Image (cartoon, rainbow, N blue to C red; front, side, top):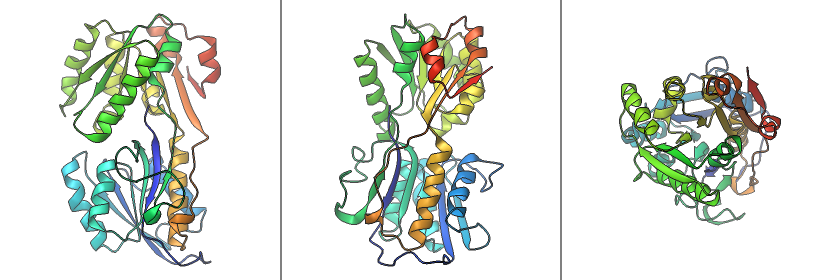
Length: 325
């Protein structure tokens, strides 16, 4: 429903790539708290793999400065300023607030945005997707979220969908909600927006009880980090209230959600690492190509379908990249 983006915001760099790669310093600006190791977090593991493919190894010729906002957007400006003071060569972030904070902190350090579910043009982060536009920024697009369409195909009698979201005054939430509403309208579905502003996981039961009282046949949720942190709670509550839940990420379906559909997230972050390495070697952002992901993840949890008394159509099963038994 909204693009996963991989974008570069930078002044032009004039040096051509060199071998062996010179030492670099990478700044990671996150919303949560992953560790930079392949066996503990797929995002960081994928970034490390992309860097390694280009000759950069953390702890050898690459230093990583990590900062986490811990889901608090007001922390981004302070953390971005810390990365600038740490002398990083490139900043990688996965959120719109992270990009804005990094851009405000420095107009010369390249910023790689990967995994953010926004349209960067509509958000005002870049002016155009066309090659060669001013300031030499680049956008790498991703898949459109398929929650309403996938739910409609899986549940032929579906008439309405609940969409759980955060503050609609936040631009990336508003974009997601607008795109979800438009998709539902095209499919002839009624969308019921459900606002949730709390931070306490204990409030989720009240939210799902409220949704269950509405005439909805399925639920989708905005992939905000504070929601993703509670994916097991969400999956359990959806099953408790017998609500088919369409998530974004595979681990959410594995936790018990009915389905999850998105671009192949590790591939997005591997390419982010590859892009960082190319910039560190001297590649000009203006010369980097515009891309669209070609790998997608579509997981269907057959255990959950059975528990809900649902029969998944063969056409849906045939498209699934993983069937969770």
